[in-house]
Image (cartoon, rainbow, N blue to C red):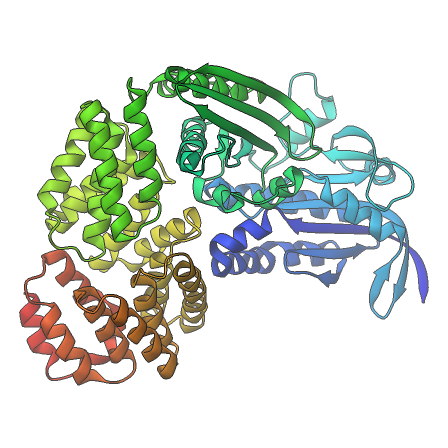
Amino acid sequence: MERRLAAILAADVVGYSRLMGSNEVGTLSALKAHRNELVDGKIAEHQGRIVKLTGDGMLVEFGSVVNAVECAVKIQREMRLRNADVPGDRRIEFRIGINLGDIIFEDNDIYGDGVNIAARIESIAKPGGIAVSAVVRDNVNNRLDLAFEDTGEQTLKNIERPVRVFNVYLGAPQPGAAASAAQAAAKSATPVVPERQSIAVLPFTNMSGDSEQEYFADGITEDIITDLSKIMGLSVIARNSVFTYKGKPIKVQQAAQELGVKYILEGSVRRAGQRVRITGQLINGTDGLHLWAERYDRDLTDIFAIQDEITRTIVDQLRVRLLPEEKKAIEQAPTGNVEAYSYYLKGREFRHRFLKSNLLRAKQMFAKAIELDPLFARAYVGIAICDSLLRFRGDTSIRFDDILRTAVKALEIDPSLAEAHAARGFALLVADRRQDAASAFQRALTLDPNCHEANQFYGDFSVTGGDLETAMKHYTRALEINPEDYHSVFQLMSILKSLGRRDESEKYARLGIKRTEEALRRVPEDSTPAQLTAVALAALGERDKAMEWLARAQAIDPDDWVIRYNAACTYAQLGEADRAIDLLENCLQGVGNDFKRWFKNDSDLDSIRAHPRYQKLLELAE
């Protein structure tokens, strides 16, 4: 056992659990790249020693406190650049804490208060920031051209005495900042990436005492998320990520850490007849302090005014500058008819469940909303998206010109609806108007980069055009936006296999199987997860399990032609070429050009392309 003085750097990934939940393969790959290309090199350059690695963090020992701080600053500034074009909810950001103190060295590991304090300081550092103890600040203050923010004495978990903590200044100087900060910013060759305030809106609790009103509370939550997402100065966690917290006991500070945000909005909704009570609380996720709380007791007809007030209050509290076009967008009520809005929220709730029967039910709700308000653009979008998803799942009775007509109607009323452009793009893709489809998808993603349907449909468009790199980009984004999306996961499996990246392909196959098993537990009457699981298991060479899952899918939907196609993909990968081709001959008769293009580019069928009967299949696909 040896005692010595050392600078200890503790680091971890902000929101690691959320990142892993949305895309564990992509997260691990990105984290590995950051370490290999940046972090490990900087540590070595500054004579540091990596003592311990955890799933999302590390403990590093430095002989020099100056080296420790300089290393941390270079890592965080470079990470800002790396994250500049990465959506907020998929960025890998580090928190770093540094302390200088006595440590115990034994069996190649380190212990003691010096280590514990560094770890506790790291836990209160800002995302993408560096927090240091007073002794660190005192030792480097005149030796590095940096400025520090004094946060005062902090009570740290399991540390007997309060510790004075400073944040290291990394960005551009604010008015009144110390001259040394201005000099540091001027001298630094590293461009500064503006930092946006980050917030998550947790699902509002239904306090109505009626489970049938759950859709209303969820709808209010989703619309507040939508309004906040329109504001450039805010980074807002997507709906599907926050709804994983629905119905669970929540510790706000833990949720903020898992989601990688500074602020949390939570609340409740109580609806009784034509009256509604909505409460909201804005909480600092770092220290748990309430920044704002309000209760609204209003007529139901004031529901849009309440949402507008909540959004405006958050903007004011976080001191975010609201642009004129953003102000106009959040003030625009989707409909003047509250009953139509209620039907729309019911339809949206059904639409999120994806099962065919739920999509049909959702269409009924949207149609009722349109009866009550023929100018309700979002309701037309709802029908267009439902029809797109039904067609996507193999329902050829859905006509592409009907989808196109409905989407165009929505856009005539409100051209700013990203989902309407996505549905229009899907219809144009089915109609084989590919150039127009690409423009529609690009417009949708310009309006809302977090539009799940736009990313997924654009991925499919890219696969059928043979552009696998673009397809990978949009499928990766789609599965991160929606943690329940297994379609995009399996498409990445197939694409990576085509590109010869089998290790990554197998990881996505395992991730996809995990998601489909969860989907079948939720909705056992849906055959789609079972079909795709069979294909993935076949790709992994697990014949018996693949056949078991295929039989399960066929038992649920024996007459579904999409099952026959996925069965062909399963057999092809298991080496049963004739059996696969028998099924494909049946599938390819009477289908549209969109499916024929898919068949020609589907890597699951690569093993049968040299088969003599395959040329006849190509003739059917012409």
